[in-house]
Image (cartoon, rainbow, N blue to C red; front, side, top):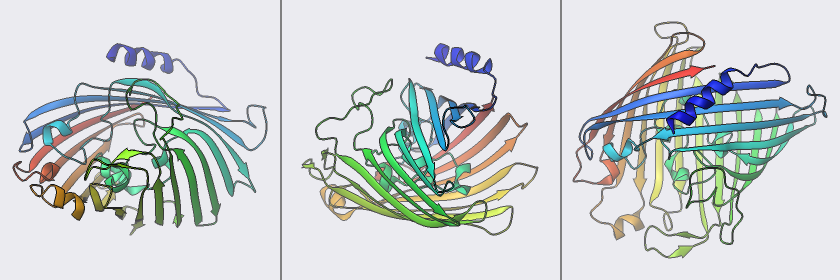
Amino acid sequence: MSRWLLLLVLLVTDLKAEEPYLWENTLTLESISNLSGGIERGSVQLANLDVSLAIDTESAGWWKNGEVFVYLLGDYGRKDPAELTGGLQGISNIAADNAIKIYEFWYQHYFLNDHIKLLTGLHDFNSTFYSLESAGLFNHPSFGIGPDTSQVTPSIFPTSAWTLHLTVNFENLYVLAAVYDGVPGDPENPRGTHIQFNSGDGLFSAIEVGMAEEHRYKLGMGYWTLTATTENPIDASQVDSNYGFYVIGEKYLTDNVAIFFQIGQADDSVNQLANYYGGGIVVFNAFADGDAIGLAYADAKNGDPFLNANPELSRSETAIELSYNYPWSDAFSSQLSLYQIKDPDMNETLDDAYAAGVRLTISF
């Protein structure tokens, strides 16, 4: 797998970014070590390659008000580091099965001076929904999208689904509405790109409304439903109705200091996790130009029906991340992260896990 990733890096390095073709290419290398507690001590190495191409259809001489986007994803890792810490919420947002796939491939058309956008194709739900700018510093998965929603495996990393996605944006107000295939890819085969519309897949539908101004503030409220036929984690019955909602927000207190919060809830009759609470603070340009340091907290709670069926488990799992990112140049940065996982997997027999991660990011 690493050989194929190297070949892709060499290939993309030879491509020149010029109008109307915008290439963005990033290689991320990460090592995470569980220092104590959890399931076992040890280290895991991960690699993630992102190769994307955006094409402005008007600049390309095709037609006006259109954009084509293609995103190639490559992942490598012999083991998920959460298998060491025991964390139900995970610990790395690039942990995935070894695979090379077309992750996104969509077309978007703009209307009314770009106030309305309509998109169709393979698309990452979390690239627009349940997303906060300031939380992007952190590597723990819950700060990207809360586990209240990710537990139903919608169209998010590392497997996307086909969608019809609408964006409406007037001044600082926005509305997002989308319908996705309810089962992304092929659950039996995580490698490669698979577009399937099978009986029982159902639909994952979502709407988010809010107000936002880049690098100043955001407040959003979202609601989702899932009609895919899935197994109820409480009693193993088959269900085809699920829902949840969330509230997210962030505020830049100064140009360099931002705070954020996440609150999510899912139907506790058909989900293990009923509630999620997250939040954090980030300081930009703390010690050098372009650096960032932050502290964040993620608490995922089991619902009462799940606890009644599993009385040996505790109520919640809490993850705390302290991260510092330093940009050595425009193309290279390093990040050190320290983690504490309290009550890993809600298992009272496991000691709290303490882990450290080092991440290198190379853009080319």
